Length: 338
Figure 1 (tube, rainbow, N blue to C red):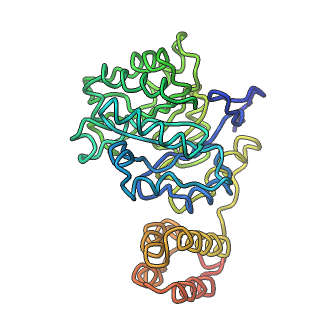
Figure 2: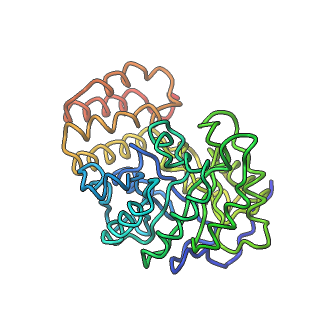
């Protein structure tokens, strides 16, 4: 067993002071809404981002895009993430995002889903690096807030220019970069390759924080990536779904070398109820119930024989009924049962 020796130098993104080694919640579409972010903050996330917001939708005042600008003061520091392929639209969107008064603006150059890349946005822009740099420079000049970027290694296995991309983005003024260790072509398949993330971090020309992302799903894996690749922080995405405790688990492991016990059934039920309540407050009962469903499986993923209870959670459309089901789970699955 070895422990991470953390320096006392805080990681800074512009004028934002984070922890010595920040554990960051990745932006995830249809996941990292305010109710989920509040839970992640409660359990130790050092920095969070909104779901990504279409620049075109934002400048056209589309209700879905505008709604994503909302955040609670308890979530700070928080970044608003925007995406797009048009320079003017991205500039206008950045200015609108700045009016919401976040701590920073983030540009998504990493989303690999077809509806985004087909427009040349997200990871689609990895086929047009000059445009990527032009957009970034324009956004940096348009806002007084720190600008960060989240991206991938490159387009595919034969085209992974992330070392050069990171240098160019730094040169036009970004204050940090988060790198997912996959290419656009990989989507979320295969294993994340942190080798090039390490090369970016150890490039003597780089002086901004380098955040690693991809496949970190445990405290042990977080420590391995930190120690092996020397990144300035780690971004947690899918591993946080239904598991907001992961942020504190990693911090505890870094500090002590010991693994925290997994939350017992009472903790899980209480957090699940809080998540649902906050979701209903923010979205209304019908939508709040519907959009919390995706988290139920992960909250109880390692509990055997819970399938029938989970089916009831996934099909119930009534808040009071869901509370009764959760209490049934509390009653039927004590710590000694799983």
